[in-house]
Image (tube, rainbow, N blue to C red; front, side, top):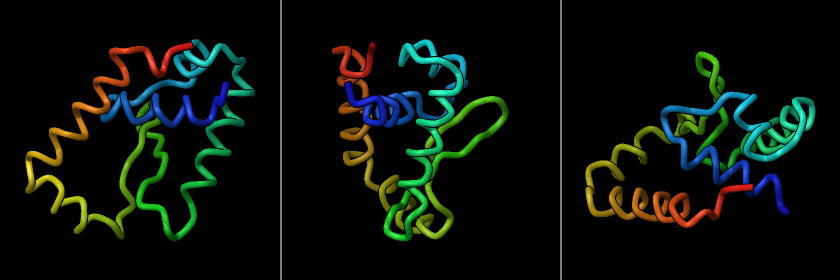
Length: 102
């Protein structure tokens, strides 16, 4: 199983709520150290200049957020409700049909 891909999908699906390290351990069925390693590896892939998102740690949860330099582009997406709804429907479908479970 591609754990990085599953982690990325989980972070996308949980949205603004975010997810704790313990929840990541439970979903991926890995220990705490492996969860941290996977988060750091995925975070490193988002740190390149050509990526528009990053992994943020807010409160006690990890979540995907846009980079500040991409803020103006993000606003345009939310001005077009059909595009936003399509993204939401895809994420919900992936979650509903178990694409991101153990």
